[in-house]
Amino acid sequence: MCFLLYGGREIGIGGVRPVVRRLTQKEPMPVILQVDIQAAAGTVVRVVDESKLGGAELISISTQLK
Image (cartoon, rainbow, N blue to C red; front, side, top):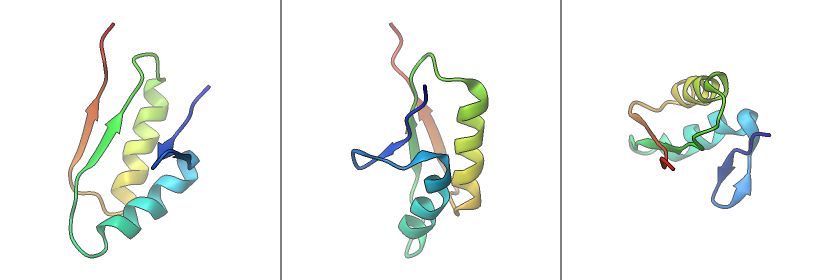
């Protein structure tokens, strides 16, 4: 199961692009993905792609190793 959250609220993959677009409208800002170690690589790639389409110039991915 995949959860995409922003501000404690679930936005789903379809919500990534509009959120990033809104936040980067005035000035560029990084997108930081906090990814679960068990997240599917394809899902992470889709979120990165949606972030780029929303206007993100810098995208970082972090996870916590167990």
